Length: 335
Image 1: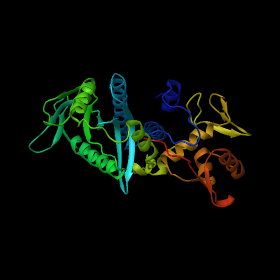
Image 2: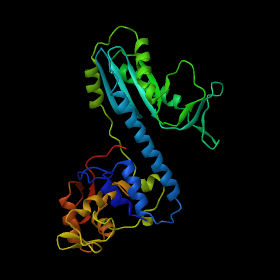
Image 3: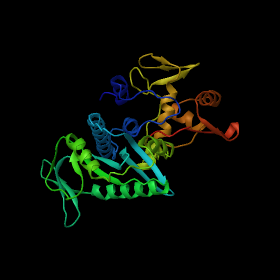
């Protein structure tokens, strides 16, 4: 089987990032799958998780492309991936349209099949192409939660701005069989029309602050996303992962540290910084903390002196005395 990592690098799906960023959630799942044995019992589940994650991201991209066609004669601002917090109440909102008359929450759902909203039971389910019925969490409850949050957040900021919401189903293979009256639910190609309908129903009086000022306040209040390393998230022991440093040329974990460079025993490729990607994988998959012993075991380095020197050369936070030094990432990467 063709190695996943090298294929991702060549296709431009996975890139070598600055040294103070985690891998994205999707990149982390790919790295986790590539380090698990072929017969690992959770591989099928993780492949399904990866498929859902990438499908969701594709859906979000479709929404953003469609929104480029949105036009408002009045001032309007859009914010994607809104992460805010009120005390212990945290939310992540896919999109937030701000105007002088109101705010519209945009929720993205990548669900295919025949879509049913049961008004009587408030259940939400889909029937796939094979006729299998799957009951899911009703996205309207999440939308209402986010509406209540933004209403309270605006109140605390002393901003009088009504809030509405729109659920956008991004899959090209979804069909609405039933909807809930009075709630804004649509497909991607219908989104802008529905946004105009929502805006027309807002009161005509404008807020005391402009959409640009509100956007600036929201961006400044953004809550950092702290992601759990995937091994802990999926209850996988670190001992189950295959260790070693990947060769960016052939994709095999055959890089060995010789003098001041990494050398691939398979294709003879050389790269003095190959360990940086491996460090990023360690933080994304295994733990938020890394010490010299763990680094040596994960990268197959024998010399404590060489390992400490390499860790010190990477832009990481350090704590503790030299012999017990612990390294952490300076910033968290978004999902």
